Image (cartoon, rainbow, N blue to C red; front, side):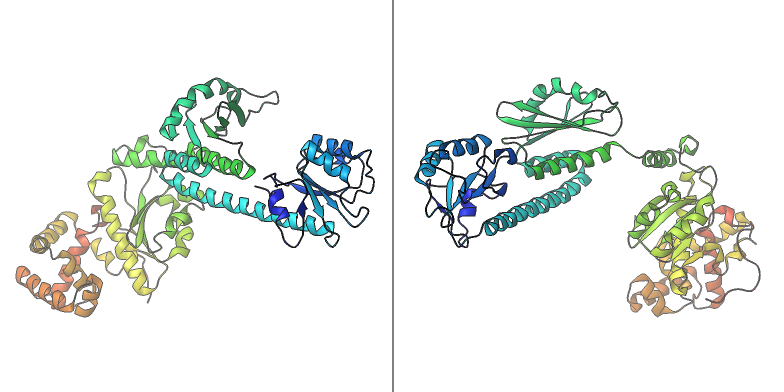
Length: 498
């Protein structure tokens, strides 16, 4: 609220004194200095008018006061000791008779000091309104993450009134408080005004209603010709400017929720198609192979993908400290640069998506995570599973016998729950300390598990030949069938040294 006459007069540095009794809580919207006999053509109402009474006479005092009262000024400040030694009796009598507040301004107080004081108070009030509106927008944004119902509830509390979210037909979707639902009947007849087009081809964005005990504002939701809903709010008093800003923020958030981007709908359809094993029916599922990327960037990955249209066709899943991304193979060249700044990336081999329940995607995720772990160790930005040492061996094997060999060798370890332990031990090339750190266990725990692994295998994992067989078996079990016995992406020529 703007400063009032009482707060302005209470400023000790101004020395103002009321000559018409106790001061009301009348707001002061500005300070106007005028020596005109009739300043009202230059006033809007709500001003504190300051004068020295240069043109004031006993004959025109009553008419002067009458014009100021008719214009709706907040009050009159009369400077003494300049033209008049005291406030003229005729002016004081007219002010008291007509209900105009009259403040005596002492000679040492310049008018500009009063103007500056009120200006500072108005600026502080404006800043407070902006701060309040900004904080309210933050609260509404947080509530919107939960859903429109939470947003409507928060809005009603911020305004100190009630709020209704109506669907396009005018039926109540959310009401806060619940009793506000009964107000929808009074609002429904006015909604056609927000549906019909204006003469210039547009549509009305809002309307105000005067109903008993309520000041109601209704705004349409949506950007197109047909509204996607309506937001109605009601308060005991007319909404101030800051409150209109808060309502506008709520409408913007509800509009964003209602105008769901097509890419988002297509992406959800893609997920449904994969779950239902119907990729051919989804608008956004690639018609070719995909890859799985394991990205160390974690939370930064979705933001990076949203910066480019190629990222909109990827599916992202947070996994603890990293993230998995399913990428159409044809977009890999565009997606890798998007994610390059988020941290190391491990890339699986390409797989088909015709049978998502067949296990190819989980196997591809294991490949990507193996490649990511190797990329972190080698301090590489991107590392593909096909480029890991030893991947070429798998292509020399027959899928059937290779799978049988791996299943037979690893079966005792699976029964004892030792696969992860042996995998870490083999990956560390028999170094117990490194394997224990990778598993997050004490070295004595690792040693105990490896003794048990040796017992169930009937072989010594410290023998390099045994570790080689275990590495091959583990690689076979973690690779999709197409990777075994087929040529892939292994590069020929001299190997790079990390």
